[in-house]
Length: 258
Image (cartoon, rainbow, N blue to C red; front, side, top):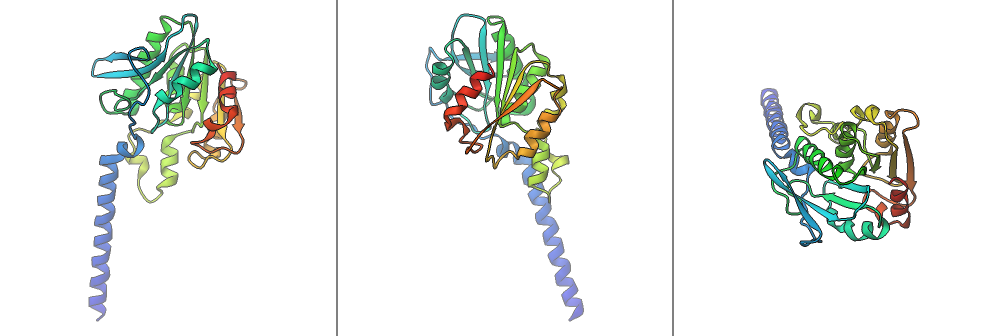
């Protein structure tokens, strides 16, 4: 009886280990499908969409052209159709040329998204915009804050705005899935803290008071990596990660950072 029980326990342990390893394999293979949730483009036509040619992809950019020195590059969240910002941004910031990049796989852009490719696309967009506009503000939201901070650490942006930013996607992944070896599995880590000390332009953090997606501690940790006097944070009260842009304070705060 004891031998049978031990055999049964041993079998259960083997099954548990096999299932655990299977889940790890699935997480490894499909991890980017969990990070990036491509959305179609709801707004756009010949006058509001341009194509950024890349060697291996076509990147669509929702635009509102405007002559003058000022331009905004917007890098959105992991499940955001950035074209939906075109009208409210155009109305709120009439003196800004607007460039809202659709990541690979999003909004008609071809290819598959990854941290390295999205960052390279953002750099190419900046270089194109900077030829026409000398004062470029880079705005990132949620996932896009990791792209934005990396971009500004390497390009001559005038200002940086980070909406619901995080210190490190790797750090958040480890906290959310403590039973799995996320540190060794995650390919797109978005470690924003590495680039924060390199930022020398005025930077504005916009955080949601009741953010359940990005812990406030993560945002504040990122803030602590900036040089003294470079970055400030504003908090939108009674708002969540996905609802802070519904607040009438949102566009006002965003405008303060341009």
